[in-house]
Every structure is written in C-alpha cells, then in structure tokens.
Image (tube, rainbow, N blue to C red; front, side, top):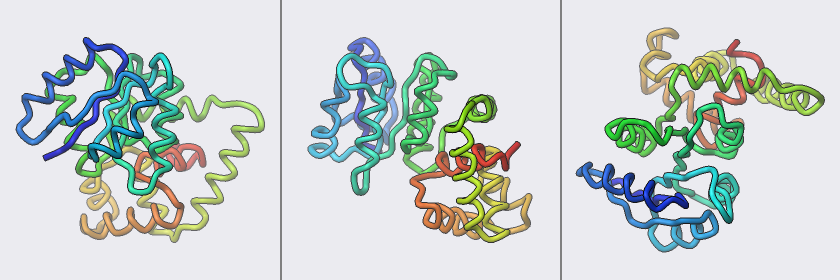
Amino acid sequence: MIRVLLVDDDPLVRSGLRLILKGAPDVKVVAEAADGAEVAALVTDHSPDIVLMDIRMRGMSGLAATEALRARPAPPEVLVLTTFNTDEHVLRALRAGASGFVLKDTPPQEIVAAVRKVAAGEPVLSPAVTQQLIAQVSEGTGGGRETRAERARAQLALLGDREREVAVAVGQGKTNAEIATELYMSVPTVKTHVSRILAKLALGNRVQMALVVYEAGAAL
C-alpha cells in the first residue's frame, strides 16, 4: 500500500485528489494538510511514502516545506502539484529533491500513475517538461549561472566514463531500459551505475542527477 499525504490550501483540490486516489486499490491517503507548516508533524505521525505537495499556498509554501522535508533523514518522496509547468518554483523544488511534478489538470489515471512511479523510485518528468527544464537552466544569466555550471562540471568530473554516459542518458530523460539498450548493458547494471552516481555526487534522486547534467551542459 502506497501511503500518501495531500498538501494543498484549496479544500476542493484536496477533495478531488482524495477521490481520485481512493479509486486506486494500492494507494491510501493517510492525512491532509492545508499549509506547509503542518507537513513535518504529519509526516512524523503518519509516515507517508509520498507527499503530494502544492507549491503555492498561503502560510508556509510547498517549496519551503519540500526543502525542509528533504533535509530530514529518510524523507518521503515529494511529488509537486502545480498549475503551470513553466513555474520557476518547480525547478527550485526539483533541485531541493522533489521527484517530479504533476499539473493540477492532469487526468485522474495519470495522477495515480505518477504516484505509483514515484513510489517505485522513478522520476515523473515528461519529455516536454525535460526540454523546458533544460531551457530554464540554460537561460539563467550572471555569475550565479556560471557558478552552477562550474560546480556541475566538477561533479561530473568525479564520475568514470561509463558512469558519465549513464548520467547523461538520465539527463536526457531516458529510462533504465532505454539506457541499457543504448549502452549495451543489462538493466540491473544500469541501476547499479545510477545508485553509485547518486552516492558519489551526494544526490537524492534521478531528477537531481538530471539537473546536474543540464547545468553542466552535458545533455544539450
């Protein structure tokens, strides 16, 4: 059973999400919050596997709540809820360790599928969204952008040649099966490489790995 915490300041949105997830036999909504400030205590009390988190809320934002959650030991996965897939806050949430995001107008079956994917350790980013993230990273200007690019290139330099190939493929939005086919290795070997890369670069998930690749310019 996948345990879910719903976080949104709109009671109608929470009600709709609760009904959608109630129809999935392997998903259970264990608690709800209307403010990011409530999240930490609810996570402690209910031990959810997934937090379905709205970004823009009155009170403590979902962004701040995500950053606080992901700083905890063994945190639940965070799946961001947003209205616009170009929201600049989404990129910051992904950098903080969110495993992906779903739009609020996503069809019900796709929301359930997204929850299942995140629970299985897979990021939820469509190819179109991946391209938008690349564009957002590339359009940054000034010293901050240069510093991030230099830091990302230094991180990738820590990897072996094969690990770098896997990291770049992850950054291009490819699945483990696609990477295995492209690089002539087994899926378990790809998974092993991904785990080693995450450990070497001190990253929380594949989305953060993809962002490092984008910032280094290696996926372009």
